[in-house]
Length: 168
Image (cartoon, rainbow, N blue to C red; front, top):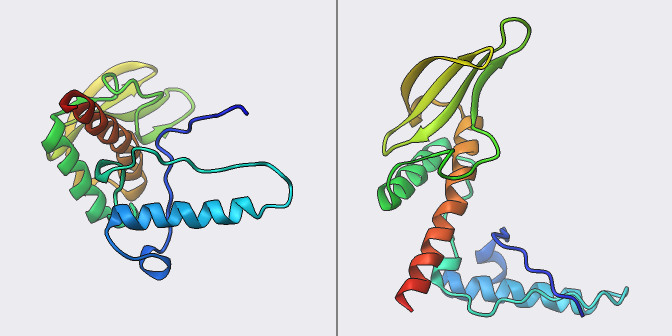
């Protein structure tokens, strides 16, 4: 049987409704419940979620990222732990976009660097950099915060796993 690994898979569920114990125990219970349903699946897919080596660094039981204040706190926490970074260092496919206006001239404002309390917004006009401004995370709209969070959270997870491998 071919095995496919999916990294950074997020499992979101109402933990206190269907499981109990620590966050790690709740995550394992949820996986067991899902596997029970998958084993009863009538199409013979033989699908199973494997969770070997699951530890506390793999489980994040914090609030979902739908609260701007929570996202700012989480972004700050990640930067505090790992230091400032950039979309270049993260090898991001694209930078979070503050705004973009088409037609001639094409103007875009992209978030390209992240430090503890602010991010660097670079403005381009027809692909030429025209200005740089540091903007507080609190002053960004929720969509841009989501884009930043979606870049930094996997980086945080990967850094924790690297640290754990180095400790072992």
